[in-house]
Amino acid sequence: MLKIYGLPFSAHSRKVIVGARFKGLEYELVPTIPFKPTPEFEAASPLRLLPAIEHGDIKLADSSVIALYLDRVYPDTPLYPAAPADYARALWIEELVDGALAKHVLHDLLMQRVFGPKFLGIEPDQALIRAALEQHIPARLAYLEGALGEAQWFAGSALSYADITVASILINLHYAGERVEASTYPRLFAFIRRALAAPCFAGALELEAAAVSDVPELDLWLLQQLGLR
Ligand SMILES: N[C@@H](CCC(=O)N[C@@H](CS)C(=O)NCC(=O)O)C(=O)O
Image (cartoon, rainbow, N blue to C red; front, side, top):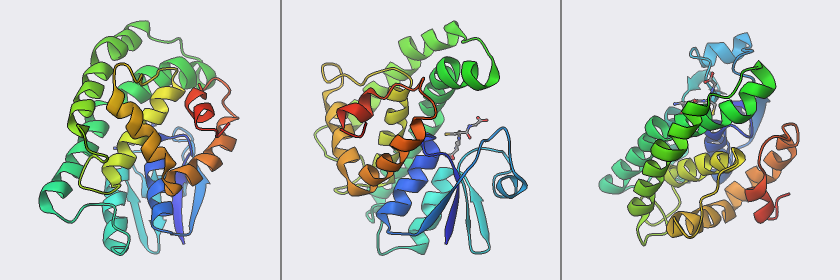
């Protein structure tokens, strides 16, 4: 069975969980706190980042690497498009989110506002929060809004890991107390709702809704909007 070291409300873990559900894989989620690593987790994720997997003899870290691996092992339920241009585009969207949006959502907002004060006793860095909200995040959201255009999905004509990646980080943006407003980002606003209605996402979010109760500081507006809370 696929073992996933992660947390339901970690954006990168969710990407792997949703992919596993799309593919109909049996999986075990091993709740893992990155700064309290177990030897098993660290053996799979030497950088101590969530998520990591064990699959038979294979141990792997990094959500994108895991996604590519699972898509090769289970090709009958593809989550990367076959056409080369669409495939490359899926990889690019993942890279953009992971390399240039995720850290601003996860570190500059969620860590400063919620996890740092709650678990590590740190004071929020207001300059970091301001730069994320005024510069980094709006620039990336505007890019994604344009990249989606009139399409339903980010890469090709079906749900792919690109969509799972974008939707997943946007969930965490909402957990941090921000909104993707229909007035500013109409396509992304509709996209989130379309993506989260997919059975693989809806099922994962139902389980996640139970886990987020442990962190009442998270803003659950989006889950409430979707009827999941
Ligand atoms: N590129 C990595 C990023 C993983 C990542 O940043 N994971 C976060 C949780 S969503 C984490 O483990 N953070 C803990 C830390 O930064 O110490 C991936 O795609 O898996």
